[in-house]
Amino acid sequence: MTRDNRITRARKLYLGFAAGDRDVVEEILGEAFVFSSPVDVGLDRTGYFDRCWPGSGRGQRFDFVRLVEAGNEVIVTYEMTRHDGGRGRNTEILTFDGDQIIGAEVYFGWSL
Image 1 (tube, rainbow, N blue to C red):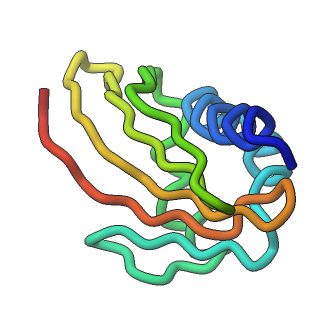
Image 2: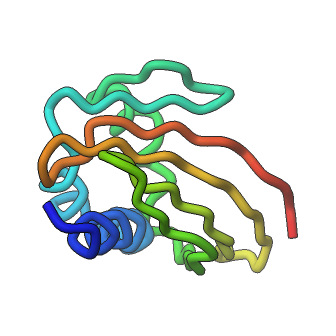
Image 3: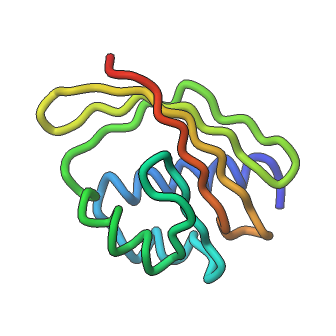
């Protein structure tokens, strides 16, 4: 997979989450997907949808600060604006297997 395709798919993941478009997100996440953040370590794909998906489609906006491909990973730093106007900044590392994302490591940033 080319660099542009991985970066495009990474963007599509966040935009699908913001839109609440589960079909798009399910197509991007591989069956072996594992999600980890400081509060949720090692969620499998089902756990991700159970725990994280209820927060999708709530009028969030993602502004991408950095999208960098490094090997089979894309490093994403974004500033998110919530529906209530609150803002925050995080960095995530997405691991790819072919054209599917099989891992997400979330590193919490700060409020803006």
